[in-house]
Every structure is written in structure tokens, then in C-alpha cells.
Image 1 (cartoon, rainbow, N blue to C red):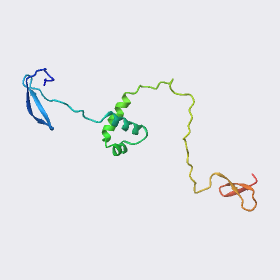
Image 2 (image 1 turned 90 degrees about the vertical axis):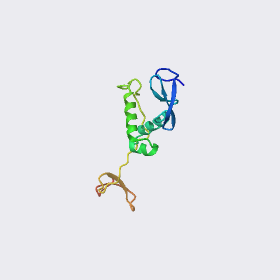
Image 3 (image 1 turned 180 degrees about the horizontal axis):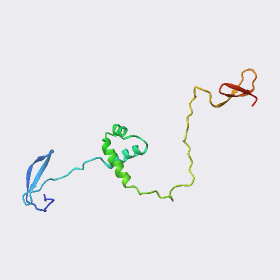
Image 4 (image 1 turned 60 degrees about the horizontal axis):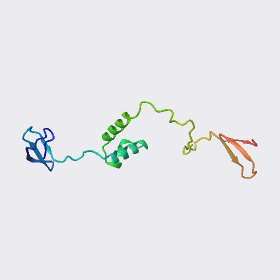
Length: 138
């Protein structure tokens, strides 16, 4: 066993610290444990949380899904944002884009404000309806 501070081998046991054997150096007085475990979340968990954020999930939802505190998520997003370049490389942006999944829903209004094509039951002709008024043969 070697002291990480002064590289001395004059080491003595000094009780337990969080269930691990604590040591003290007689030369410099530094206390340390033999093996330090990594603290925090793995890179895989960070990547998963950032991916969920990019997909549009809120911080609290990601917290419920992964168990990671929302404050930690906010810090990760800030750190990832600080690592981004100040402006995008405009050579990578395409001039033409195809939007396939854009959908718009227009609900039915109480008033008939739009033009509709109405088929008359008996005559078989098509009429144009606007706010309840019927215009024939248009």
C-alpha cells in the first residue's frame, strides 16, 4: 500500500469509511481508502436521458422514466449545450428537405364557415354549401 500524497509505504489502518477500510499515512497524515468506486451515473444513462430530452420529453417525465433527478438532467443538458459550436455549419444544412410526417387536424366547427360539396339525395346533383345557404350548379 502506497500513500497517494507522498508515496510513502508507512501506512496504518484507520477504521472503516462507508463500509470500506480506511488507511492513514504516518508520514503526511493523509487518510484514504484503497480502492475508490466511481460515483454518479454511467455514460449510457446520461446518453439515454439526453436522447429522451431531444425527443421532446420534459425533465420531470424523464425523471419518472429513468429515476434520475430532474436537476441532474438540467445540468447535463446545460453541459451538452455548452459543448455545441456557437453557430451551425451551414455547409451541412441541405437546401431541399422533404417533410413526410407533417399532419394537420382541422376540427369541425359549430358554424359551417367553410365551403362544402353537398350531394342532394333525390336529384343527384352537387351543390355548394356556405353557412347553411345552398348554391346549386356551381
